[in-house]
Image 1 (tube, helix red, strand yellow):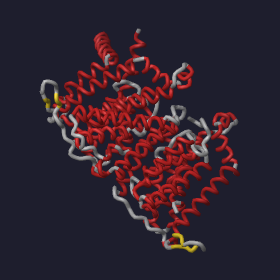
Image 2 (cartoon, rainbow over the protein chains, first blue to last red; image 1 turned 120 degrees about the vertical axis):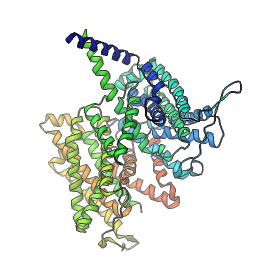
Image 3 (cartoon, helix red, strand yellow; image 1 turned 90 degrees about the horizontal axis):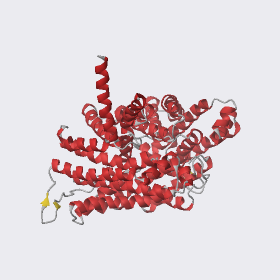
Image 4 (cartoon, rainbow over the protein chains, first blue to last red; image 1 turned 90 degrees about the vertical axis):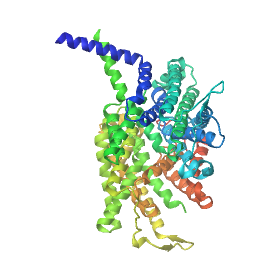
Length: 333
Length: 280
């Protein structure tokens, strides 16, 4: 009985060890079949887009230790950028997505430059305030182009034009899922590459002790700005995909609630772990979906669950799992 | 002209600044307490119809809620990273806003100006709405009382010392966590009064807190966190910026304060009255 327990335990640890060491491969394999595991494809696509957003956000919060409350700005800039590229400039699909991401990147450069003039909680307040600025700009100043309160509507999904005159339509939900999937895979690989590089190590050294990183000769402000811009790029990419998927760039993509959700997703999943924010996004969206069946006030429950996590599980779902498994492994031999 | 809304900013910013200065907690739920104060006022007005009674009841109710929140949710986080209390109060603001929606509904409510304070008053050189004058005077009195409390009482002395260096205060034999408890109550009570005072001017609805909170963050960034003087002057200044811009370009009021903030930030990164490097 006991030996059997031990062998299942060993098998389990082997699986979890493999999972934590190769979390990217596990994640990708899972995502490839994901739309067939959930009741409808829409939630799979939503999770993928929000997961990308949260992982991009995590570059800043989890790896650099900067708490931004204004990532709605880059998500929204991505959404509006892609929408305008497709509606007004009649760009192709890939062009539109990239246009949105680049718009967000430029926005992140400008805002990041200003916000990084202050540190700590001031940084946090500034990011929030500047995100609200974009919200009001879209609502009242440029409402001729953004559609104001109604959002930018009727965003088309043009087919992807490949070489040799082949064009590939992604207009069905499942096809669009795989289109998002491919872009996410590329993004995850890029993030992985970046975070495992010496640059990623500098980011984490800033998170642990900025003064020490500075005295090692790094221009920490510049490094933080680069992290901010990368984070803005991936958030913008997620925003572009969101707008194309829903055929609309709604005003609330720029609202502070969008920033709030990405913070919640990242904390729930586990900031500072690679796959954690993705897990958090999935849990957040599924919770929202399930709770809103029973009651309109799902925010009450999500807020309360979030508070419990902050007090009792600050490492988040994935972080707590990883730590438990990792420590168990350390104790074994 | 924008003085009365500036005064509401001042009350909120002082509470936020006081809590932050002493406890290094950014109370993200400050806007939710502001909203809660307005709803408590609505509740008391419905019950008794007496504005003056509400003026006493609201800070007590909001402050009590603040004490409960501090004791059971923020206290476990002391000693952790500064971001955790912020994240926690962020979650709390969701819970509070949604809770109010459940009880009072999602739609806004009108809040009648108390009849004694309706109509204009002749100041000699100009006519001025009576309620606005009341808000300005009431805030001035509250700020003055708070100043007296902080400067002239023993507890105020301990609070000021705790803002400078809480470890030394603890070494001198003061139970600092009790001081934190009290200050969180005072800060949230101030937010409650601000909510009540703003209610007749802006109405009462569940989302009234968050936009106010963001504007209040701007006040704090412009004025410099932890500075009472900075909070007062920046609050009034931002109130003027909003109302003057709204007068000329009605839709630009919200945008103007952020642009104003960006300019201040470029010229004086530590805010108008902020000390460089304070708790960054």
